[in-house]
Length: 71
Image 1: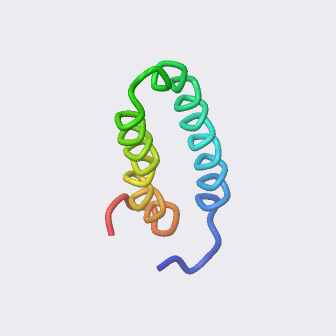
Image 2 (image 1 turned 120 degrees about the vertical axis):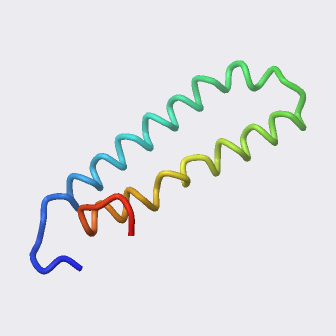
């Protein structure tokens, strides 16, 4: 547990916002092709893309709090 304030948290939050915005823009850009696929396939792809951004979130939040990538 950290005992004093660190710049990892504000920089981490800014990085998280930037990366998520870029991810959202990438998905929006890809939607021009995804939109041409059959609706059930689109649903699966958007479900996967909607959950995929969560995968790196836990290690990133651990790093922001502790400075290490693993708990």
